[in-house]
Amino acid sequence: MATTHEFSDAEDLRTAVSNLIKAEKDVRFAHLQSNQLVLRRRSGEKPVKWLARIKLRPKDYADMFPEGTEYILEVDKDQFDSLDERQQEAVLFHELCHTHRNEKGKYKLLNHDLQEFNAVLGKYGPYLPDARRTIQTVERYLKTESNNQLNSSEDFEDLELEEIS
Image (cartoon, rainbow, N blue to C red; front, top):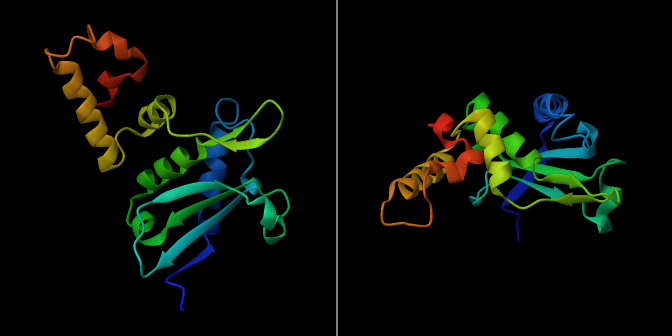
């Protein structure tokens, strides 16, 4: 049976990834170096539900990757290449935000959370339709008088929603 997808090197993204890491080295990516990432572009007949994803290097296949590789960052060619440069950068930043090194020195992946979402939106604004929809949902929620759980938008102060619109 023939493979319906393939991965190729995406070294053309290396400069953007390196610049993102360098710009956030003291804050967000102190644990990360560009050479710890293998960058791949996925293409194929069958569409995928993800635009980009980051994975830990599989321990069982360590010899298949360059020495020092900790993460594999993959982008879907059709979806990713259709974005403008700023959107692509925002997607790469979002994926890098999932990387983490714990106090024992072990590399990990972080799940999605509001802090990460806020960091991406604070830097790039609503860069994709999903982000715009999420902001609209939160704004509707804040405006709903029937919801008594929130007293005002001050409860969402850390999200800086006012600056995002």
